Length: 494
Length: 84
Image (tube, rainbow over all chains, first blue to last red):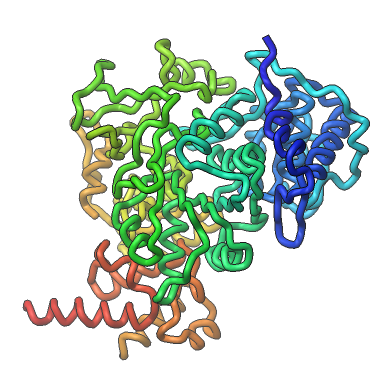
């Protein structure tokens, strides 16, 4: 049985009601719904000229500019699976994405540095679309997705640091609009939506692609890296009404203001990606008079499945289950825990990915036979509100991105001074960062020069969010009787 | 050395250019004018280690400018001296 094509569904209402309304603003560029529809069809025609067929993987290594939704619409219309890479991947990760997804085409800008991207044929774009556009009327047969057809694929870090592909169907772009955008946030067609999370992440994809198009709203895109000065200037200049971001950015905004805080044009402030500290929620409300609606989603579910509601946000809680999703907190034997007790969070819903790409064992461990997905998060629930309590594994969420301790530890161990090490979450102010705990080789002593050497090593090896914020030297690492490092004890040390 | 001068020295050690450091207005938020978020976190840790203090959660979102940091360091170290 055919399912709706997300590209057609998302644009349908706006093309009927307000085709000349602006869909996207990016820098000095704007595009209306009518122009976006034509550009998407033109991109689909271009993909067909390139020999791309339904099911082929097309990697979108684009910044958040108008070309991104244009390319994504083109992929959806042809049935190609859009692989969300963005522009912030390391060369190794991009190579892995291209090889693992068996991509047939790499869509990128001319300006982008694409070390490792040479193995796959490129399709070059500027910030508005392909450098060699094709007329939209060349495309006239939109793909009709079957129940199992994949629409897009996200890549998220696994516990070894290796990225894992998470394929989604067309419905994962549509259902969050009703379940979250409408039911929870009450988005409207007069909204101007600004998300600091990029389109290559599930959260940013729904915020900046699905929500604006479904509601006939306008989205503000920011092509460059998220820097706080630029975020504040965009808010001042364009006056968005809905702001999607992550705790790190909210903290930066607070720290970047001189009191009194500016009057913000926002009617909704939403957060996800990592737990929002109660202190940050309270300080933001004190300064702006606005609440931050925290929620939790996962790349496997495409967007939020638990969220706070406008006017009812509770500091320190990620909110209540979004109607349409089923959530369970279970103990080690899979039995549901009583209210107020910690349990492993399992979730099930219409937007869940059916598997991991080429990872059958991980799929079996995470996607359970009863239809639930094991998130790896530990929560407790009280009066219907959910409270984050930590992770079952060692993964650390920093700036809404996963950090695998093993990746950071590998860089530390390359230094001749480091005999043993472990990386665990530490806090700097209210926010979580990786912390490095080291045992030095005899003969080495701890010094500011050694810290600088280690920091320099990280600058050349890993993205900034993975760099340890704190270093601490120990006589020995705390371990269990079987030799496993006790990271909770390291966290307690700070 | 004046606390503000010591703080400026720490900012220099974070890799910020001397011209930027010399022109820091003591009331400016360091986040927007000097650091991005990760540089800011590194600076907070450096201040904690240099002065042997802990920037508590309570203060962490209200310490913005060079004067704020200098005030906190003076208060925390004075409290420590008084208790010894």
